[in-house]
Length: 59
Image 1 (cartoon, rainbow, N blue to C red):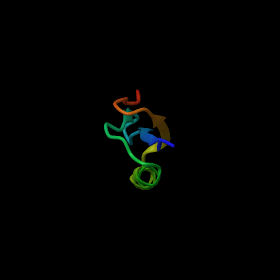
Image 2 (spheres, rainbow, N blue to C red):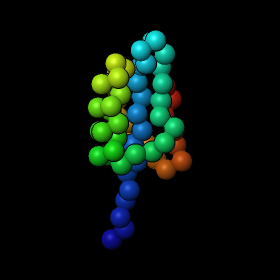
Image 3 (cartoon, one colour):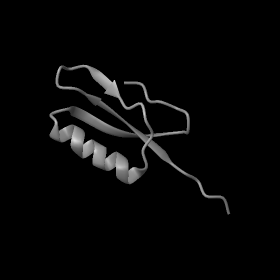
Image 4 (tube, rainbow, N blue to C red):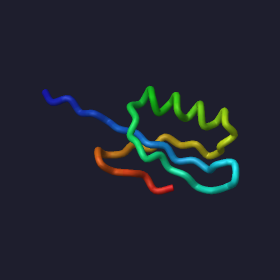
């Protein structure tokens, strides 16, 4: 049985109102931790987005 790896990225709006997207892939736990960090820094609309390997989210 093959193991399937799911990658995640983040999208958010920074404190100046600009849409941003992560340029790296995270596992679920790391994505959740990064979301918490971004929200603590005052960013809004922080969303965890499932992605495929080699894919980047659009801000």
